[in-house]
Every structure is written in C-alpha cells, then in structure tokens.
Image (tube, rainbow, N blue to C red; front, side):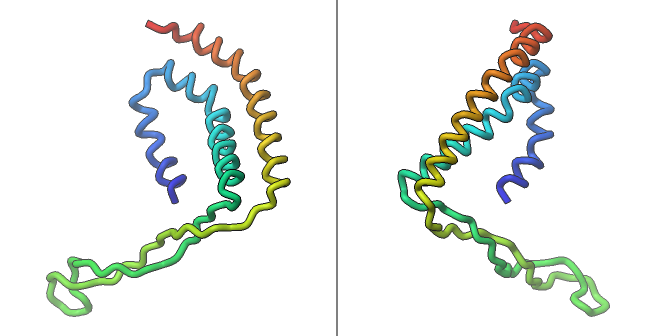
Length: 129
C-alpha cells in the first residue's frame, strides 16, 4: 500500500526536480532500494523477528450523495470497504538473514561501483551551479 502511494506520488515529485537531480536520482535508485533492504534486514536481526503487514478489510460509514434507491436526490449513509494493514511478528531464520545481509552488502558494493560512471555522466551533462 505504501509502495503504491509512493509510486503514484513519484511523477509529481519528479516534476519538481531539476534535470540534474533526476539524473542523479535515477543513477542511485537501486542503491537506495538496497540500502532500505539492508536496514530492514539489520532490524530483523536485532529484533529477532521480522514484521509482516497483513491486509484486512473494514467497513467505513460515510455520508454519500445519491438517491439511495429512491427517486429523490439527497444525503444518505453508505458503507465503503477499506483495506487496512496490521503488523504481525514473523519468525526468521537468523542464518538465512545473515546470508541475505551479506549478499545485500555485496550487491550494494557492486551497484556503487556501477553507479560511479553514471554519476560522472550526470555531472558532465548537468554541471552543478
């Protein structure tokens, strides 16, 4: 859910960025994702469990405009289903999480090395003021 909101907001935020900022952001986007995964894995290891978001559906009662099945227009109550998320702890395999963390750190090092030329290209194309 949060990811969907961020993806919908991304075009609006990208429109506010300068071309240089957009270029730098696209060059380091994968590194930011891996950094977030590293932080999540480290938090799981320090807690001893992972946190999973489980969706559930609730109903909200709102005021709606409509005829409510009658031939006159007015205010009525309507139920709207809403998806919410609850966090629940999930057991982890510590050895698997440590392997995952080591792989993520290797991936980050590789992505950082690959991003160097792209960052240089962005800096050459859009010099800083």
